[in-house]
Image (cartoon, rainbow, N blue to C red; front, side, top):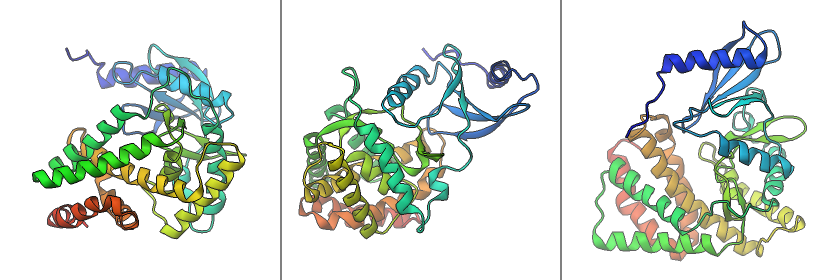
Length: 337
C-alpha cells in the first residue's frame, strides 16, 4: 500500500513552524540551501540570530535516525561533521550548524587542489580508522551485484536501448565478476561510499564531511578513488596517480591495512571502474525514474575515466571492447560523446 504522504503545502508550513520554534525566532524565514539525490532537503534560516540549516527528512520517505546514528559514530571517532542543535526525529526535522555556502567542489582549482586534498585525506584517514560496528552493513556480494545490475538495466538497456548478444553478456559479466572479486578481496574498513568534494565543506580548521548516512564496511581503496575521480570534477591521470601515492604513504603511516603501492593502485583503479559503471546506472535511473535529469550531462566524464584506465589491464579488455563496439556508438547516436 502506498503511504499516505503529507501534502507539500502542509510540509512547508510544518517545517517553518518547527524552525521558528527551534530557533526561538518567530519571524525567521527559510530559503532552500540544497537538495540531494534522495528525499532530504536543506533550508537556510535567516532572522535575528546566526544562520542555521534545517534538514527536512520526511519520515515516510527517509528516516533521519540512520543519519543521526552515523553522525555520532563519526564525531566520536574524530571526524568533523555538522553539529546538531535541535531535533524532532518523529517529524523528520533537524537544526544543524551552518557550515557556509560553497562546498569543496566549488572552490577546488589547480592551484589549491594539493592542499585541499591533503586536508581531505586527513578526514578520510580518521574515518577509516574507526572500527565499524558489528551490525554495520557490508560492501559485499549483494551490494556489488545490485550495483552491476544498475549499469545493465538503467544505462545500457534503458538509456542506450542496447540489447547485448549472449557473447557480449558473458564478457560483461566476466569483467563484473573480476571487479567484484577484487573488491571483496581488499582489506575492509569503514567506508563512506560517496567521499567526494561535493560532500566536503571547507571550514576552520578542518574540512567537514557530509552525506555520510550510507557508510558501510567496505574495501579500503573505495573512498580514495572516489575522492580523486569525482562524479563532477576531473583531473589529469598523472595527478590522480600522485594523490593516490600520497594517500598510500599517509595510510601506511596511520597503520591502516593497505597493500604495496602497485597493488593498491590496481585496487583503486578497479574499484574506480566498478564505481563508474554504477554511477552511470544511477544517473540514468535518476533521469528516467525520478525525473532528475541534470546528472546525465556528466555521462561523458565517466566514459573518459574508463578510457583512461581500461588500457592498463588486459583482464578488463572485454569491457573496453564493449565500450568501443556498442556503448560509444550508441552515445553518438544520441548526440552525446
